[in-house]
Image 1 (cartoon, rainbow, N blue to C red):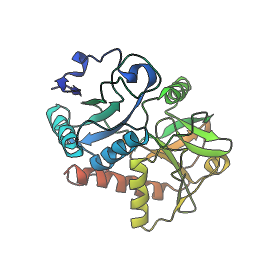
Image 2 (spheres, helix red, strand yellow):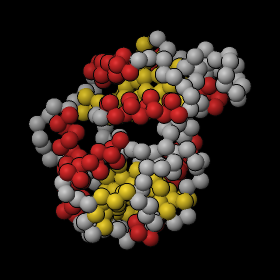
Image 3 (cartoon, helix red, strand yellow):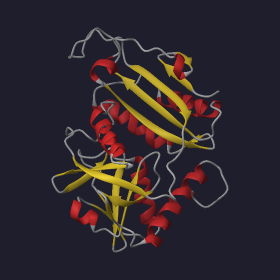
Length: 287
């Protein structure tokens, strides 16, 4: 099948799925989500993503209405049932259905669970990416993967209008993250990335790149870094579920990075090797 979706017990194609008007996702973006990408029908880092999904739900007082193992099995099954071996798998929970009212205790039906899988692919690592910068004016719970993505929508639109791929955010001089990814720098052979506080989402792919760098003997610093440090870095790259390790060579119209090709390629190859090993594919060069 081309795609598949689940909502509160019903399974159908995404195009045929109907969501009640009074689902709190519609009025308040009252919910959380997570997403992962597949290679050879295998959802990458599935357990890491689902663990974050349940953790995000607990942070906003929502109990996901399906046991972990059952949801995991559903995601795996859906990924196998879609025709495309390369796909995006998505899980979401909202607080439920009820007449519009800001306080959430009382009349809700119970949490609503959404799951879907559709064809999609990883961002290619062989190409170079361009970014713009913008002041980070989001709220102070960025570590929760909320479905309230209006700021990210606006930042992503600005990047597209500028002919770029991503927006790198900063609060004053401190770089936080991107519109929909984490951003990192390489300087003098060291991998530097923002710490996991309330100003960034603790990216699953970010954690995997940190672990791999440590295994390869590459020094890692989890600390705040500035816009000036970023612009002077040897290499800049961003990571997300779809971006295993994407190299940035242009920011705000200025050439950046390009001074440690060997190290960034080593990290990219390690990222790709991990993904295809998890998917059960023989080693091949990354693309």
